[in-house]
Image 1 (tube, rainbow, N blue to C red):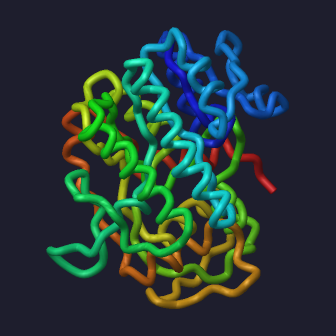
Image 2: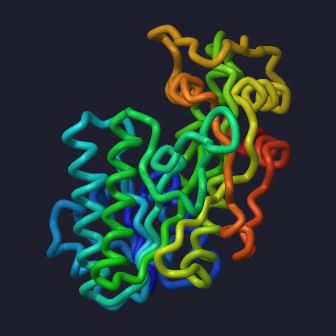
Length: 309
């Protein structure tokens, strides 16, 4: 039995569905029963809360592994720290006490550091940790990753870190995350975007990479799951073309700001644009067999799946 936290979220629901499709018994942590309809039939639901250590211990009982995906995105500082750091600490403690392997889902934002070999930043599987980003989400996710790796080094926790880059594409939860930005561009609601290069990965490919990390990953290792590096304007214009939209975006140079009416997730182009974008070192994940699709295939799949209008 594999436990998935955040199983009703955008990425978590894709991971729960993928594990189930691969024949693994799955137990999903569900805090809000009204959101559980995205889970496939046959996935066990368990009521638990990351703020409640006892409920996590009960949820993990009988499991052989935990996929921790629950996180706060866009929440105020105290709330984000409580869930992203405090919640992760309680999941770590529960997994350690149960003696099971943990796959902790991190983000490129948590390990985006100045690139010693050139301009911009690098997301490196072998980085010591920390991030050059200063927003609440990035900082709290960096702290959460440190909680996991410290527990590996100091307490013998069996854990791997799956670091994901910008996630998009089909998910049982629907067209959320960067899909919202794609849809807004196709409607002509994205006039400007900062021209910065970052990584992009399909949600299903994240799920496949996480399972590889669980089954074959080395304890204490970080695995970066990235499909392809591409600029925000390139990705948005390609999506518009594939979706049959005549709209295109205007690329602004790195360091530019967007107006207050910019759609969700457009601000990430600003955040990474200040750093000069990033490149990725993901040799470890690819050595495990991870083969995320590039943006041509990924965006074509997304355009066929996403509702129009």
